[in-house]
Length: 511
Image 1 (cartoon, rainbow, N blue to C red):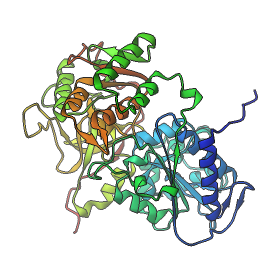
Image 2 (image 1 turned 135 degrees about the horizontal axis):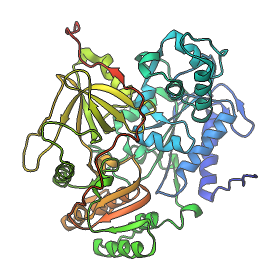
Image 3 (image 1 turned 30 degrees about the vertical axis):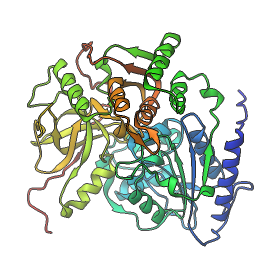
Image 4 (image 1 turned 60 degrees about the horizontal axis):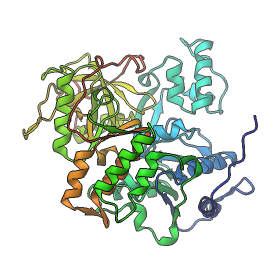
């Protein structure tokens, strides 16, 4: 079958040319597939911006392919080949979920944390990593047969993930990764997707590592909390920002994107927008005018809300309909990582957690109690090696109660909030096949008349919420909850044994 040649829009072609010129200054000639020493001088930062459907991800993917064809090494954060004088590219996203969206499209993305910290491999299994990465002979490993190695090789050919390949061979992360260390040497080129989520500190960290940095972001999304409504790429000089304005043909018949882009009309009221949603639901089953929250979806696709009080009410309603006891979690309950509570002397344990995907905002499914009191078995959504066991502090918030209820807690470890409903701010960077948006919250925002960056807040909230949906949008208009069709499930998650991540020690470490 002949694959049709890709045709860029005019704004994509102009952006590609501008990036090509920036890369030429960095010593990479995409026209002739030549790699040269960088020209030196000031570091370079360029941004490609555009709303959903404008082709940012397509452009990122094509630039990645062009750099790989030119001989640039792709650094995934999993394992790095020890080759001198090689040019490198890392493709990053702020969250596991955002990185996994890119990986599903064939782009080997990783999280920012995984590029800040590099894994230390057990020497025996490092030989497998070298072989998979193309810089070593097929190894002979005690306890591993040829079939296991073949499975690892087949997985790596399709996914370019060393941990994923080793997991396919039957290994756990704790078998082959002995620890993590802060990256000491800078890399060359960084592509950052969902850069609207970056705060100033992350941006500065990235500029320390990458002398050439390309940001991809959507200016219509919500700025990080504490950034005064400003995204990092909005602080760049105008000539360093390339905007994609055209919505591409493959997205032109998408009713979800039609609704998202309709929000740009300054005269559009909330009531008019709701009529548009209702009309779209009558014409296309990808948009649903929902009379209640579908509880079956909440375990894996949280309801998106604006108000914290709404989030807490929906979470408690979810737990109630499934009969969850107050003093325990049910297997299959969703959680959101809310940070890591560890003293400075446990820095290594913190690195272990962050590198394995338990960063703030990570979506997790509870698989059951761990072997020690306060430990949990967890599945980190979007992580390449998703199942771990970690000391946990789980907080269940109650309506009208200032202090959360804690069903169990380790002395220290990863902290979690319930994840059946999340705020739209926290949902940025994530996508789900089906998304439920709690419309009464957006109506409340519209009634308050608040603005952010010169636009009504309800429109920015609605835009972000709507564009989290990949296949189907449910616009929930009533404060009701459906009945579950069955019990919560975990059988669809990978059944590999969880790798232990001990966050507590028998005796305190020396300070």
